Image (cartoon, rainbow, N blue to C red; front, side, top):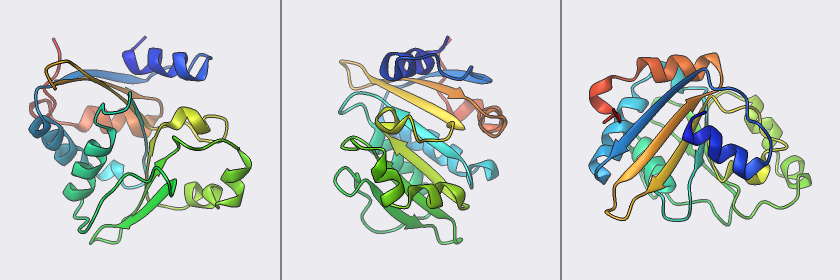
Length: 182
């Protein structure tokens, strides 16, 4: 069981879908986060993927999203959608991107009322922070990313692919951009 699977089990309280592919990474600096985001952004399979981000407050979830969106060409302010729940973005190539933050999500009825079912049924990249808060209504993540901040500002990262699309994404990432753990 990967760290992301274990973290997901702790949060959701049940066994997650088995991971089809896993990677364990170590990021020494924000530049490593940026390098990973750039490599991920170059993957064609990312266009309609669903990524979930796990980690405590300050683990680097929004920083990773910001670097990913910048690598996809999104300009302007990129902020955490903690209060809005979702921030829509559009890449220059027309890719629709939705950045969710379910930290304050309390009622599954909000899912229907906000039209999230329609968003998840449409093409585009979906990224969710705090997915455990909406686990009952979310589809399976293509890739779950679990971030853990170390005392020295480095990050331990566990990537778990839970769909064939996610497994293909992880396999396609060049090792040189990953800073993999031995």
